Length: 154
Image (cartoon, rainbow, N blue to C red; front, side, top):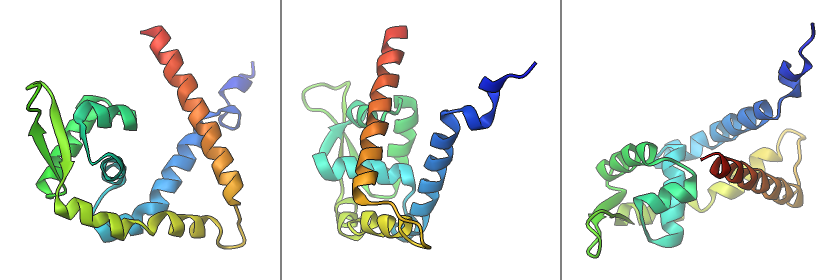
């Protein structure tokens, strides 16, 4: 009996997984130069945009559970990239804000997206900006579908 549905080439999950790993690897040199990991880069991007946010807010933006985000934030606090402060209005909430060191990384990181597009367009390979934006849009649609499905099951 053949199980076509179980062949790797017939899965949507595998190319997404492989692309995610390869993209993360492509960022590695730039992030190593900044002394941060890819998940830390994601947290920094959220904080560069919003300046301060609750732990839960960051988790929602990055689609990460609290038990995943909390140790990540603690490591970043140890690196002096951010501060964790108790909310003055609600003691149950922890507010995350950048330190000067975390803010200063923004300028250094500002060239990373351009270098990433250059990497995607090297060695005779090419992805046009419009194609990349379309892919991003389709991936966000998939994320929303999966989140909706997950919420219905809860």
